[in-house]
Length: 105
Picture 1 (spheres, rainbow, N blue to C red):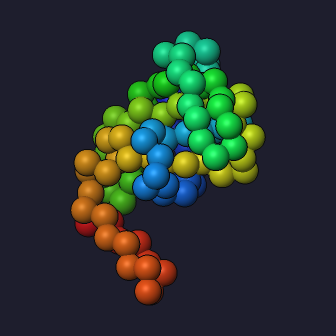
Picture 2: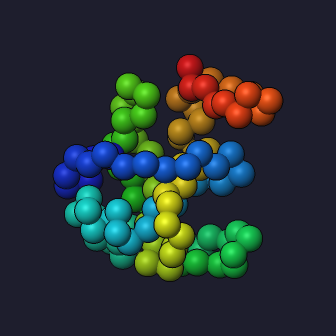
């Protein structure tokens, strides 16, 4: 991801999430000022959190594109999530449950 800096990061692909969600630590690493984004409230299994949408350039599987990412100080999970918005438009995504495999084409 490229904020003010370029960093390598990992995230879980969440086909049930509309938008990508990253925590405070990733924002700090990238130099993203969380509250300068567009405020939003997200709801999920764990309840509701307040976050801020930022559009960042990302590189996934060799493709560069702008991706909306919600950064939240309230997102306390130990992993980042890649949601569908923009990310799913860039790839043909194949889930092979039997093989426990996900392919990006």
